[in-house]
Length: 123
Image 1 (tube, rainbow, N blue to C red):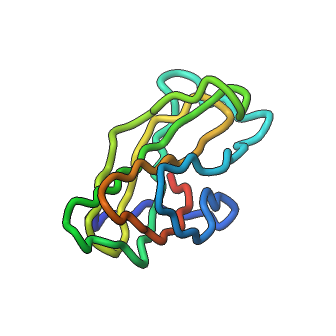
Image 2 (image 1 turned 45 degrees about the horizontal axis):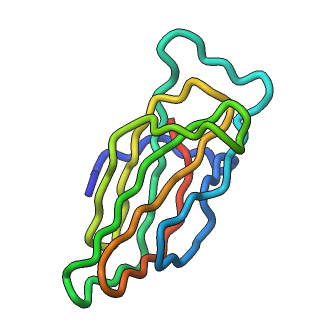
C-alpha cells in the first residue's frame, strides 16, 4: 500500500465504485481535445480505493495498470508499472500520460476472485 497520495481532482473520476470477478478494462477517460503535454509526458496516478477483496483460497491475485490510447477505442498501451494488491485500502497506480485517453485496467486470477474499488486520476 502506498502512503503517498497525489492531489485528486473530482472531475477526473476514472472508475466509479464497481465489483469485479474477472479481468476488466475500465472506461476511457477523455482528457480533452487540447490535451497535449509534449516532451516526455505528464505523470499521473490513479488513486484506487479498494473497499472489499476476496482472499478466501489465498490464490487470488489483483493487479492494476494504467493504459492510454490516441482515440479511446483502439491501440491501448500500458504507461506504467503493474501494481498488485492483496488488502483493502488505498493504492496509487502511476503512469506517464502522453495521449488524450486514459483508463485503469484490472487483471485478476485465482479460484474465487472478487474486488470492489473506485478510482480517481490524480497528478
